Length: 555
Image (tube, rainbow, N blue to C red; front, side, top):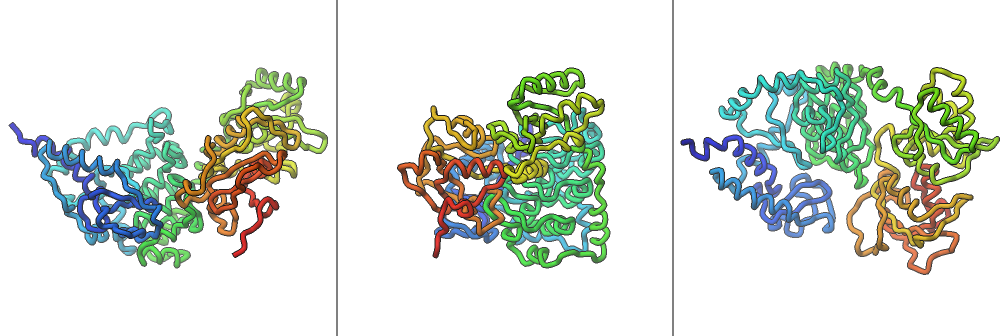
């Protein structure tokens, strides 16, 4: 009868991968009472950290509040030890792979790009926000036999194209996500050629390019770029693929992204650019060179610029038309319903994210009446059309989304807000209230009036949810607010008074200033409802100082 060592070969490999990822960045040993640096995600033993606030592994600076003990990871380590003993795996406190060898394994010379691209595919890595997992001994015979025994099945599976190619699993991952994370180049190419959308996110916000970049899968990244992937799409923690490539010290991938045109001046949810995560001179040089057109890389860059624009346009070139009529006159309501039945256009009775166009009545100057539906439409990033279009549509047979756009309502009172919201939606950027929490100092049963609009507290909470914000049930206290996040839509502007403001107390300005403390702190501000409504209409977090609502602090 075989012993445990023989029976649990695959389990041993998986456990060893976990052990490698659960290594202290300071002493290179198994984590003991792990503590995590929230700014970068790296772990360190409590005894190794002492009073340090800067990550010893990547050097990213932080504050004492950015370092937290992680009891969950500690429990994982304890239970992993028990499993290791049960399957006959000898417990090693010191991980065989040293920091030096790990860093050397990641270094790829720019003169040997072709060799890097021909690197043999390894087992799919365990997903981590820390670093790519590597196999110490690629010549391990047991490992090679395991791969060989399943190669036939994998080959057949690689040729299968699902009917709904962009269907997501429970984690929100598409087939393309899984193939990219597994460094399965052939599968990635097959899916992209079959029309898979590279600009998708899973439930955690990861994009296929972000997955591949964080693990350093150069050839997968190159494939995605040539097939029209949005280089600057914000994914997990509002980071772009360039953020993750640099955060994980993948110099070649970072250089590839920069050469392909990735924006170097974008910000993540803590207000940092990709360059802020640079921890080595090698990666820092990438930002000093505007374009590398030498030798082999010139051909690669040329290929990357030859993107199949027709294919990427077809992904969302002609969206489905779903109409919703908001507060229409009886005559126009009948026209809309008739349009739905005779022209077979989908018309719905309630406003939701599936709606593509909202039809409203306007006056002779195309001014519209402000309503709750208008605010929701802007936050959803949808079109607002005048009801004059209904009679015209009844006379036409071929109705397209592009034709409908000619009847957009965009009066001065909206300050181009709807188009900004649509652009934000098309880029799949975080919504307006990303990283923002709100407390309404308003009675639940009261109706609030603003510019002829009547709105309730419940509707205000729905607006916050539609903008990806959080509604608080208790008034926030300054001493309870921790962290260093920045709202996405002001993270790029350090001079904006809301640059680091994540918490807001909203009151009804019609009742005057509330009998409570009026906060004007960097991370907490008390503002009238007018600020919230006007910010939605213009789809931007307006600076309350520019509106005369707050007085600028003078040093």
